[in-house]
Amino acid sequence: MASLKELRTERIKKLEALKQLGINPYPIESNQGQTIAVAIGEFNSLAQAGKVLNLVGRIRAIRSQGALIFFNFDDDTATLQALLKKDGMVGEDFECFQNLVDIGDFVQVSGTLFLTKKNEKTIQVKSWKMLVKSLRPLPDQWGGLQDIEERFRRRYLDSLMSPEIKARFIFRSKLITAIRTFLNKAGFLEVETPILQPQAGGATAKPFKTHHDFLNSA
Image (cartoon, rainbow, N blue to C red):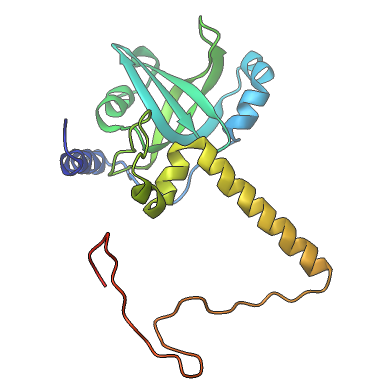
């Protein structure tokens, strides 16, 4: 199994390959038409009309089957399956995706919706655009983050890989917003008081050092 450093090195090579092809791996804008949740909610009408959609999201899984590539991507509202057909794309778009795109990358896809033989809602991609090339792999999809310390130190990864943790953060944010709105309407004034700071303060308080056993540091 490749190390994190080796995986990152490989992705940097793909980043440079994108640049050599004249592709900006970090464009300043995208052309999102609607969210994935809206596309799924209006799936039947959009599919029947054959409307070309522009969707964006982060790739969470890729499955290659010869001249076909399936991948799942989400935009924080929902997850959708996408399909690339080698004979249905222009130029080197298929090979470029196949060789230079990884799980964790953000992409924009343009195409039409359809149902697969297994009744899976899918967008058939006619063209795609790199939005953000990820240089570090995501944690294992099934194992996730097991180490408690790692989870607490990297909450952004914890919430990304765990829908339950993410739901808690969303609930907490909404709860604090509701409390703040209620108190603001009641005429309360919100103030901030220092909790931890590098400068000693307060009457005769004296600064002191302590030791963190786990990290073996002061």
